[in-house]
Length: 315
Image (cartoon, rainbow, N blue to C red; front, top):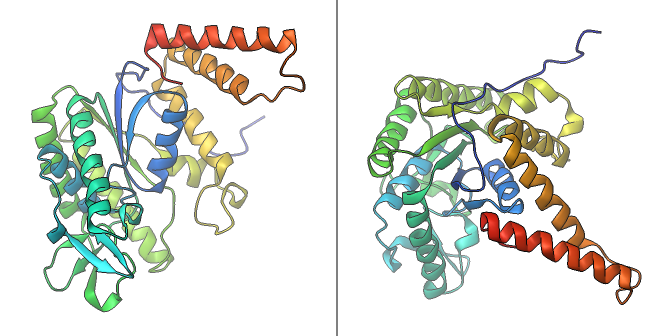
């Protein structure tokens, strides 16, 4: 029987990912979803140190800031709706006082700067080529924080612009950390704020820029998260109620494809052990005082201790 759909099988790279790797993931909400899977399975991963970021300029800017982590100051913040915001950060960093906002921003900055310096793998997930510029300064913002639209100009980045800002940032990163592997993805989330056609053009610009970037460095690997959702699954039953974001089943499918692509048999074995430990931790016994349950707990503690000792995993 012929397959009833287009099956996407990512090309395996010349490297694998294991629990000994240090990972950094920067980009859209989809980047966060996949990064969270790594975290759940006890990989050493830093997820979105600036919060969710969608356009390649802001992502490149984040990388450059991490390479030279000058602390943010009050002058970098704007007050709106009784909260202090940074145009470089997602709203999750916004707080009611300057002190709280800067504390969260700078703690995340310094930790991520150290993590990126020592990282073996960097995941970058791009959502859109659209950017918003402050009219007053011309600076591209990562998040408008619901400020009046009259303060911004909207623009679609061209592929050569995208490639230039990414190459500049990644070249600097490779100078600091020559062994790091770069995995590039395009988010399958569709951005319909400007319409379906604009979304398609926006994604096309990302694909063109990534392809051109790959020609400059063989260490840049493209993982087809977009194609797995839009071409392989290709069905609205794999989307959330808004019909724009992949649902949990779709994210599971992409994660499994990623595991098949990057994990060897040993790492997959560790994932199975971690899964068993987590299931046991979430188990709710009918009789916590029974001997059977005490043995069950003791056995699970032994598994946790072995994973912590052998691989340094933290539960």
